[in-house]
Image 1 (tube, rainbow, N blue to C red):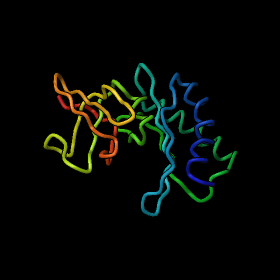
Image 2 (cartoon, one colour):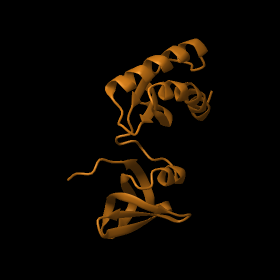
Image 3 (cartoon, rainbow, N blue to C red):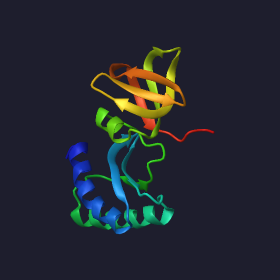
Image 4 (cartoon, rainbow, N blue to C red):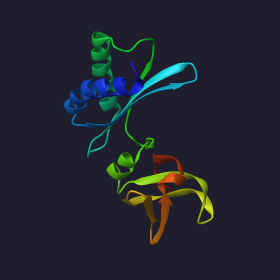
Length: 153
């Protein structure tokens, strides 16, 4: 089974587990890093995600995955808040508009390859980040990496 199909099935299992603790699933990622496979579930809730919330969702999803048994091989299940979650698509940029993020670009834009700020707007060609009164427009085809970030005060 391909990674995206696994992610969709896990999302179906994770949503009720997250709802049980008053949270919602933001993303599911099934990735290989070195010799290990990781199944990552990112959850959030308005009052903030606690360690207990992550543990509860992890335990429930783990039981459901053991019963369903559709992932071949071993993997490491991780449930966490989005803190510095990777942003993988334009849909992610739109979904997290208003949140602080860090973008890296292939080429220097306004003198830097690294840009941080609040995702202000997203269109078919670019993402606009704001940092206070300053704004930078990043063409989508120049973005090499993006993730939610925690602003430094």
